[in-house]
Amino acid sequence: MFDNKSNGKIGSALVVGGGIGGMQAALDLAESGIKVYLVDNKPSIGGVMAQLDKTFPTNDCAMCTMAPRLVEIGRHKDIEKITLSQVESISGYPGNFSVTLKKSPRYVDESKCTGCGACVSNCPTRNSVQIVEKEKVELQPKYAEKVSEIINRHRNRKGPLMPILQEVNAAYNYFPENILKYISQETNYPLSHITRIATFYSSFSLKPIGKYTISVCMGTACYVRGSGILLEQFREKLNVKVGETTENMLFTLKAVRCIGCCGLAPVATIGDSVYGKLQSKSIPGIIEKKKVEELQYAQVNN
Image (cartoon, rainbow, N blue to C red; front, side):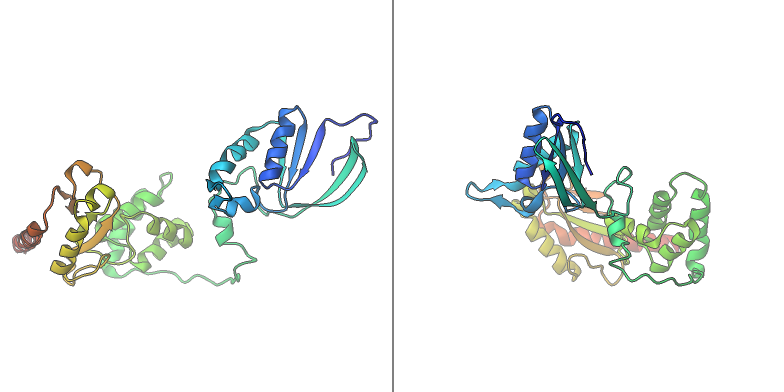
């Protein structure tokens, strides 16, 4: 409730509705030196316009119109946003009135919110909460010693999760499901958090990938110079689809947006090797050369 019992006018105003009109009204009032309370029943301001791509009749970008106002409102010292709130009653008269608001609970500390979205994915009103006793995860012998050594080496450092995942990925080239569960068990990080990281970075994978990742650049510079033809040539030569791995676990084929070598377009990488100004006729020879190198490596190490 905002109340003032004095007989004079109060130097504040209440704007109901945080759409584009309410936002502009709040800014105009605040620029006139009036304290403004901007009330909206949604979790954030913006209204319907925030859901639009273009606006009629000019076809202007909706967000381009809104964004400057959002920034100004967020920075303005005389505008206080009150979201998830509805007006219940108004009493008094112009210049001296009281407003009672009903504010819905947000269940998070707004001063600490970073917008990570974890509260949405774990919301108890959207998810059926079940308490189950965790079973102790035991790793297969081929994983146990190496993974335990990696975890123990980083266990006592600050922020151990990322270096643990990087080393495990380097050791096995992907994340077996049981290893992620074991990391969660040993580090006390939620499995959902670990999985989000493991699926966010393109260098990580939840399924086995080949020893050599073939990345064909499909950025604009490479595409106009024929990278689509190169990708098709790799698919035919390896007999796999994009994102798949050959049966011998030697090659995984990927299409990427940009490698950063536009001057060498079209470009592809195989492992750490970069092939610029690549021609489709060169692809069979490159693949065979890699196979021969791998065969020689295997013979030397056996």
